[in-house]
Image (cartoon, rainbow, N blue to C red; front, top):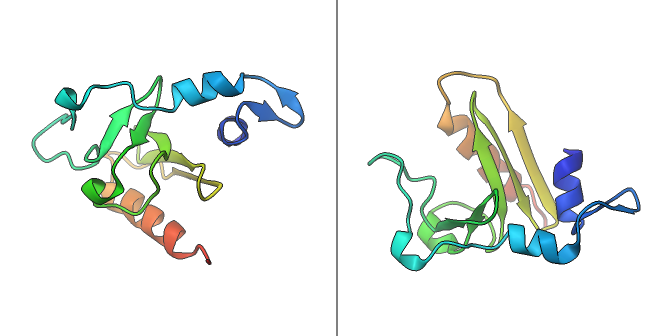
Length: 122
């Protein structure tokens, strides 16, 4: 969570600069050409729709194409055992779930994200 907070803060945590702002921006923008998008791990893969990849993160580049709630420029990573985190700079939001369930239970991950965005008040 502290790592994600540092990224959301543009490279700074608790008043200490750990990464340059330009470095964070470079890490969190799409570096894949359109010809390689969308990346599919298997034919049923929908999690990567509307997304590219930065230097270490999946980056949301087209919210409508993704079919999920979120904001353009959101970035994060999904891991093993039903774990995922994402950072949404526009909403100043970090989502983090570590359910520790194998095989990955994507419905839990997707519903967590939907409920998180539905809880945001305008």
